[in-house]
Image (cartoon, rainbow, N blue to C red):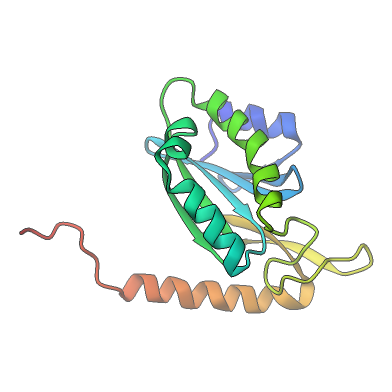
Length: 172
């Protein structure tokens, strides 16, 4: 779902609003925005190396980063990172500041942005055939030939997630 605040921001940034999400390029990174109950979700696709993943994870595990940008939770994978932002009064101001900060932070820490295929990590040249694919509600720019492998990895990850033992609701 994309409510008025995110929709206005998406329009201001030239993002596409479709299928309950807003997506497009902000600061050189493909960004997806959506809302849930009490949260706003920001997904950023990019090609992460082990080193860039370590640096980004360390930063967002600090209390200062969590507090400043209201990051309730984040999940990093090879093809991108998903942030859940606590949605209270003034959240759009926080999101705007966060999306001003985030692209430079990712670039400084070696995360490859929209000019690189999130499936293979190789540069997308102007002459290359590329497409934007939506996987689990997150937009990725990939080479035409790489979209299948990214979808396959996403399906495997989803199946693993569905079969892993959950700790929710377990008593002492």
